[in-house]
Amino acid sequence: MAAMQSGSEPKQPQLWCGLLPGCSDDRLASLLSAQELAWGEALPQRRRLIFWQTRAVVRQQLAAWLGCTPEAVPLLAPPAHYPQLAAGWGYVSWSHSGEQLLLGWSPQPVGVDLEPADRPIRADSLWRRLCPGEPPPAALADAVLQRWVALEALTKRRCSSIAVELGRWSWQLEQGRAVHRGDQHNVDVVAQRHHLQQRSWWLGWSGGAMPAVALEEGG
Image 1: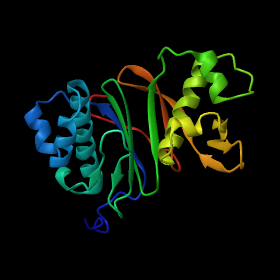
Image 2 (image 1 turned 30 degrees about the vertical axis):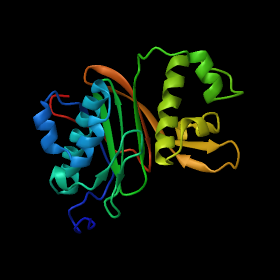
Image 3 (image 1 turned 180 degrees about the horizontal axis):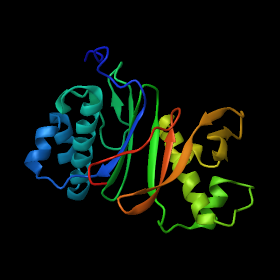
Image 4 (image 1 turned 180 degrees about the vertical axis):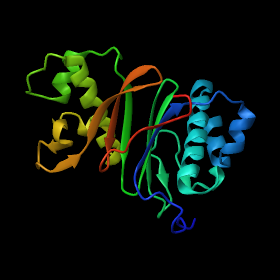
C-alpha cells in the first residue's frame, strides 16, 4: 500500500469521540475488509458486533482525516492486537467504554484511553499498585482514574502491556509527563476530564500535545 499523497493527510494529531453505530450487519459489512469480517466471525456474538462496529467507525473517521475512502484505509487491527496503519499513514489508537469510542491519530506513535468518571473502582488497592509508596490524595477515585487513563495511553503508545508498565511510573500529570521509576526517562502523557455525551469522562493521550476533542454530530 502506497503512502498518502502529499497534502491529503492531516499535519496535526486528531482526536474524536462518538458512539458506536447501531446499523445492520449488511451496512457494517460494506465498510469492512474481508479479513475483518473473517476475524469477527470467529468471535462470540457480542464481541463480534463490537469488533465490527469499532472498525467500521474507525475506517470512516480515518478516511475523513486521511482523504481516502473507508475501504482504502490500510488498517491492520486483528482482535487483541494493537492497531497499525501502513508505513507513511501515521499511527492510530482507540479506546471504548460501552458504546462510547475515543479515536486518536498522529504522525507519531500515539495512545489514547477513555474511562467514565463515575466508574466504580477499588480506589485504595489500585492506588497502591499505580503509585507504590505515595500517599493517597483526598479525591482518591478521581486521582486513580486520571492515572489509569494515563497509564493505558502510555502503554498503548509503547505497544506494551499493563502487566509490564503498572507501578513503573511516577505520574507528573500537572507537567504532562510520566517519569520511569527505573531509568528516570520521561514520556509525555495527558489525562483530562471532559463532559461528553451528557456524561463526565477521563481521557488519556500520549503522543505529543493533546488535540481538542472533536465530537460526532449531536455529541
